[in-house]
Picture 1: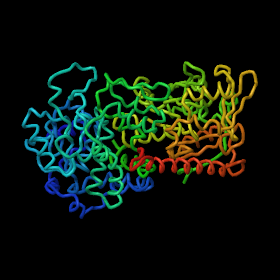
Picture 2 (picture 1 turned 180 degrees about the vertical axis):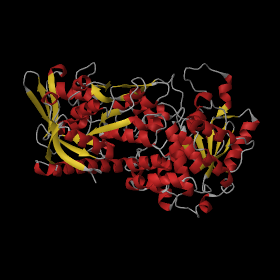
Picture 3 (picture 1 turned 90 degrees about the horizontal axis):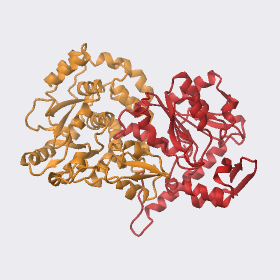
Length: 328
Length: 287
């Protein structure tokens, strides 16, 4: 946390008090189990907006003043567990810029993170964001991922290496055949994973959204829990779907199922431009594909939950308000 | 509910006759994007531009009114506009993007905003999403068959195509009209459209289509705060002529009727898919 506070000072200058307030309060959010932690949902202003856009507008202003004195004891604990990956997913988390500080001020303590928090062993935590696949030839890595599972209430596969192996695996993506590719497995091959957040890397916004929703799920009111559960469900289903991904998923599970309507989302999503549209359907260059699974996850016909999507405007505004957007 | 949440509904057409000269109906999309461009509400818009083949559009990022004018009119085939949404914010460097799309494409935008896994810095840059009413879509090969084989018109000599009043009509540049009953086109519809539960682009900022309004006019729904604001400004600036939807024929009743028909039919199709085999079904994207 020390480094983070300093970073914060450098970035925002004027608001260091808030970060000083958090360490004292950190005592409380020890390894709380999900159901128990719910008992004291203090009605913080940022929590409410989830319901209606009208709420959001009214509460935006008071929120800023109260934030100074508000006890941050209700925060959840998030850890970033680094397996074999390129740290791009962590960079993506950090690329929320001021949003990251808002997250850490109001919603979450980063209690484990090789590069940002000075903690050696994987502690108990509410949410483990696991980046990278597991090198099975490295006993330490295998032990770490098991420990992360045991110590975390929710395990999130952050990014495609954790979810599907991605470029660390014997994928192609224009890479030569290399012997080390045979040693990496996605974390889902070794432990149960609760939430998948694929893409290479998952966008800062998606990490922010999942973090806010995880907070609401663990600390929110009943209504907020319901929303967060509805929001996270498709990502949980994705985790149950398997540890393999490919551009071919579009062919097998979308086009061949008679679901593709040619919107082109997959083309925009692909990080390696392996997809082009021809006559209204995606054409996938499997040699370029790095098996990140982003195209399938982003496809509106892989999952589309109307209960969440129909509220897109209210949810968007609520997340913006929770992140204090516009006040920076 | 079949019409989604909306704040206002009017019948409207573009005030500028030069836009209406080649627009499909009221020229709403072109006029609204042109207004938004001029006012700096958007820096550019992803629209269905002219492709290499006649009536096979390609998504383009239009940054001038001239480019918007090029893209007027409906092409009854797939134009993957979402494929350019990231490109518009990257190669084109746009901070405020407009996009027009069918209901499914608007759904894709909203998913890209709520679950933006592979859509870094895209969601917040979508400033105006205009949805168009859509019953179903055809692949290009299907459209070609319908126009050339069923209507006996060469694709390159078609001046306009239109679906309305139970008919698929092709107008040629020399003034001939060739029509077939819409019933004959059903087998050409792309399968992905049969699971669609949205007729009037329920998730757009502004959605528009000819249904419900007289010829040359379009029905316009404003749905979000952004959509309502931009539409309001455009009206104030005199960019549109409007009539209350209650005063025009056939009016909102027809929109509701067609929306109900589409959604009921497709919901039934979805239910059938669930039990399509023996103890096996086809996938439902909505659960």
